[in-house]
Image (cartoon, rainbow, N blue to C red; front, side):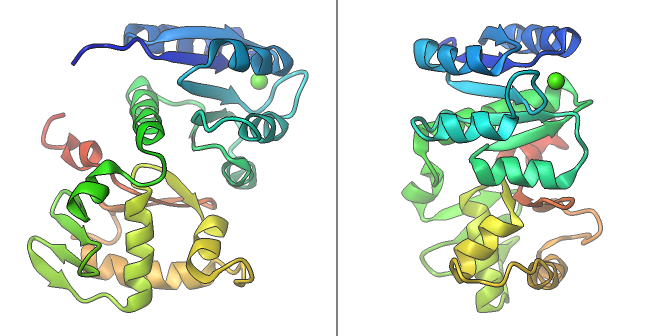
Length: 244
Ligand code: CA
C-alpha cells in the first residue's frame, strides 16, 4: 500500500520519552513533529494539521484536559493520551473530554503503533467502521455481530444475548479498537439521565463473557480497561496469536 506519510504530533516534555516516541513513529514511516509545550502544540495543530496527536497529560504550561477540550472545539484529529499516571480517573476524564485512546507509560512500540493505526483508521470513517456500513456486521476472530438481524454469533452459532446485552456488544463493536468509558456507555445506552452506576455494566458484562468468551477470565473479544471502561478487540488483535 502506498505510504501517505501521515503526520504525527508528539506533545511531550520529557526528552527521553519524546525521543522514544519520535524514533518509534519515524521507524514506522510516519512524519513526526515534536513539542514539549501546550501553547506551541495548539499553534502547531492549526499550522501543520497532523493526522494524529500523541499527548502527555502532564505538561509544564497547560493541563492536558484543557488541551483536549481546546482541540476538540475545532477539530476531530485523533488524540492518544500518553500518561504516566496510573490514576484511572485521569484517563477516563481525558476520554470523556474527547481523547480517542490512551497508553500508560511504560508501553511498548507494538502497542503504541497498534493504537495509532486504530486511531488513524477511525478518522477516515468517523464513528462507525466502514466494515459495518458495508456488510451490516462486525467480525473479529470467531465472533460476528449482525447489526441487521440484531444477533451475535460465535463460530456460526447464535449466542443468546438479552436485548441489553446485545446493545452493549453492538455499541462496543461500533467502536472496536477504542476504549469506551463507563460514562460514555451508560449515556449512549440509557440516555443522559441514566444513573452513572457502573455496576449495571459489570453485571451485564459478566453474563456476556460467559456467553461469548472461550475463557471469561482471559477475554479475547471484550477487554476491561480497569477503572475506565471496555474495549472490543479489532481484527488484528484477535489474529495476533496466529502470527500478525
Ligand atoms: Ca510530562
